[in-house]
Image (cartoon, rainbow, N blue to C red):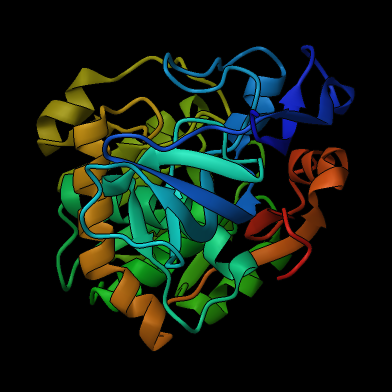
Length: 337
């Protein structure tokens, strides 16, 4: 008899009415795969785009069950699994299918949850902390004593990046956002100074020039996109590095080659979902080695805006879509936090 499970399903394209909670076949773990009994799963903007038909799931994962990160316990393992055992508390990443009672992922895409984190807190960790740590350190090579500017500082990735940059010894952590309230809240996580960006992004370039005595910032983590490009180039220091992480304000903009060339800048794009299993495994290994100990010690912590039961997934999507959140929105799959 095929085992069944509850799962969020995208049944159309458009608004939150395209989401339903249904019963469907549960996946099985074979080979190097681990089946996790999901206790909580966090939402990401990729889920909103997938619901609208703008970001389809890659091959090999459920096409109609969203969810990129989760926390739960190992329920069963394939014959090639070596490190994990049934009952372990784990969190991890997947390209889809996490918003369900069970998810199956490679063993290498999981890490053990520190004992001080609840299910809800743990579910708010993987996607944002792996994205932020990979972007800041593996790719942008942020070093002790350097400065960083984080756009959308009150977002999930933003709050994770602020904490990681501070823990790594950044000399200054700057941020931008849409409201002063969100940026003021981010101060408790290590944000030094901030600027509210309205219609003219040049306001943050001018602030960076003032706050750095004209030098500019070493690293920019940009979750906003096209409309910030020109101001980003102006705000960067010589040999600065810009990480393109999100496209909230568009995906296309004219690039001033002279600014890039004269400052010897590096511009790098990054995305986690579309990476190969091997690339994801490496990112998770680095996360487990360097970020999980910080979570265990309390030096960094997840930021949760709200948690909803799985059956209230439409309300959860509506909240995230409102752009009024500070931190993560989480779905509780089992009813316990």
